[in-house]
Image 1 (cartoon, rainbow, N blue to C red):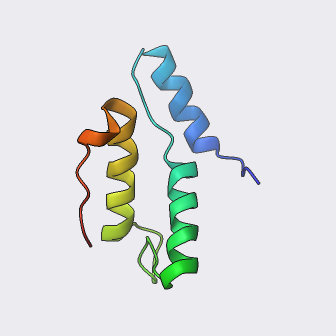
Image 2 (tube, rainbow, N blue to C red):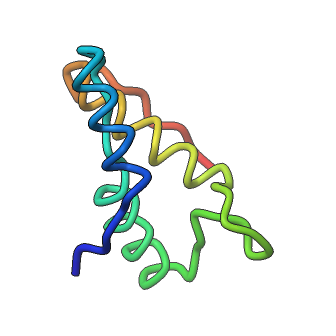
Length: 79
């Protein structure tokens, strides 16, 4: 289910108006977060707030890298 995301929609509109590339990380982060949680019980955010932990930061970096480069050139960072 796709949740409404007014903040992303506003940012995307602004980026389009300014001709700036931006990347919505919601889908890849949610997909990989669910996979890690089901596989190992690992979280991509701190348990006491909604900020990304090192796993979440790595996922965001990988998604951005794959959107701007050849995915094979992206480094995998171990947590």
